[in-house]
Length: 587
Image (cartoon, rainbow, N blue to C red; front, side, top):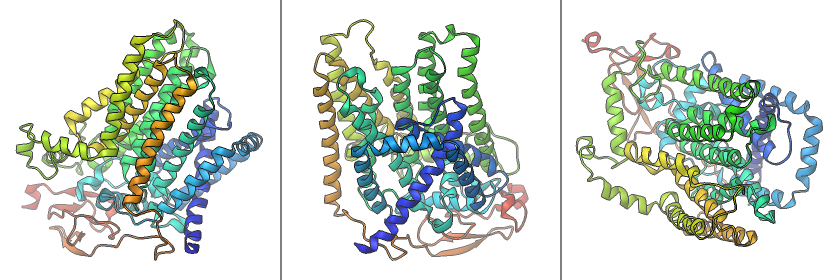
């Protein structure tokens, strides 16, 4: 046990410093939005807003420089200056936080649990397949033209890799995988635990935030990530999207509950929702449909509540920050896609730019068909799978087997919706009382429909299933308004505790209660695969893993799928990128 103190302590200390860094950067965003730093939600908002700001800055920085220690120093200096400028507010925040004994105790327990899980060996398939290699390239070079020609999965434009690379510094050089995802999960847990306590303390329905119910119900899903050793030691983009998806739903509910055309303070609910949606766009393409659907719902509500009836100056004050955030986050992201693949939104074939490093169109088509096939029936024949519905039977079998990601939230949603329908039919609320409509489910429903007909693999929509369950639970709790609020709250917590009990059962069943200290300064490192060298027609030397298709930390340039037509755009200079030689040149 004593040998766990140093590695777990280093993780906890690093998480604390990184929280201060991103929340410090978030102060700049809060000031731009006219919001002072305060305790509770605002401080946690500051982290996510600062994280979004950092992603935006890094997207531009990486056009010219690798994401390295210099940028870490500049971010840290900026955060320190911003925090020192808020010293009076900061001390007030800490003073109020010190009185939140239950929150601090629960957060400390979760921090210890998460820091222990952070010692586990990375085992995520996609992390070894592409994620680590993507981060190594970002660490080593400015953005590489045509990187997707070396290995098509490296063309996926995930801004979260920049964050992973940023943490790859100091004692974490070469192993930021142990702290990157865990920090995001722990900060979200802090948000969710705060919401659960706020819900528990609410004496009447009017005192409760709708979003507190959603945050509470998602806690078991976050802790489910920690069931297996290595469950949080990865660079998987799906986890980052899960958290952004939950935050989007939470911010949407706050907007629906509290926004009124009443001035500056109310606009904050719009601005933070817009920023988190735009950030989700840059992290993963699969989020785009849900993000747009949520934004459309928010716009409709804004109009129906009199947004267009405000003075021109007030409308401008609402819209301008959203437009600036869109330009700052999306334009660099679109440009990055063109640089790495020659397409605005690879693997979509639309938006192809005529550059010499553009991935050949036939390869893009193959990638699309392979993705559509594997998400229905992994390893199936595209010609067979995509031409019939025979894949649906095995797909449904897998859906049922994935109890926690899909089956459990589906059952919770079905029961909660039945209770909601029964409740609103039995006794409608009085006119003028704050009400949450089933319309809030529409973005999730649209996302599920789009997902099913395009890439129906559960990892792309885990947040949708659990968000649907959480929002359905919220609707059911509010619909039975004639029942004492405390009883409804207890019912919500009973649901959460049942889900948590299942998480505990899984941990015990897998006999993975405590991660022991590993041989590498207390951490368990994944082995580096053996690799061979492959020479292309142009003499470019590629590193190819032997016996597997995962590169893990094999030296650059690594690809599990070498091809003789891969060519360096400038011989001996990987900084200038890669292209696929046309057949006439090869001949």
